[in-house]
Length: 151
Image (cartoon, rainbow, N blue to C red):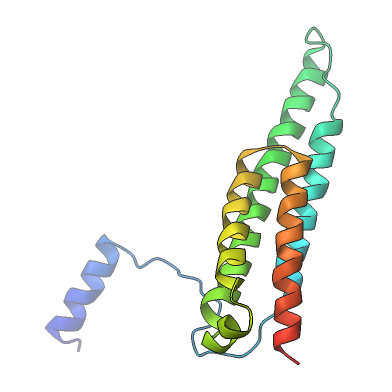
C-alpha cells in the first residue's frame, strides 16, 4: 500500500513528468580533457569549408535546388551544434577543472575563456572561415594552459 504522499508525488509526476538532465560530473570525477573542444572546433571548420564550397544550382532545376538547400541547412545546423559543444567543453574546464591556483599562474585565463566562449557564439551565427580560425586559436591557447597545468 502506498502512502498518500507517494501517491500524490506519482500523480504530480504524471501531470508534469520529470525531465532528463545531463551533467559532466559534479563529484568531481577528475576526468578532464581537451580533445572534445578541439574536435568540435575542427568540425565547425570543416562544415564552414563545405558550406562555402557549395555551388548554387540553377533555380530552374528543382531537385538540385532542393538538394542544395537541404545540404546547406543541415550543415549550418550541425555547425551550430558543434559550436555549442565547443562552448560546453570550454565551460566544463572553466567551472570544474580550473582552480584559483591556475588563475594565479595564468592571470589572463579568465579573459581567454570569456573570449573563446563568445567566439563560439560568433561561429554559431556566421559562416566565416576567419571566425572559426579565431576560435581555433583561442581553443589551442586554453588547451596549452590545460596541458601545462597538469604537469
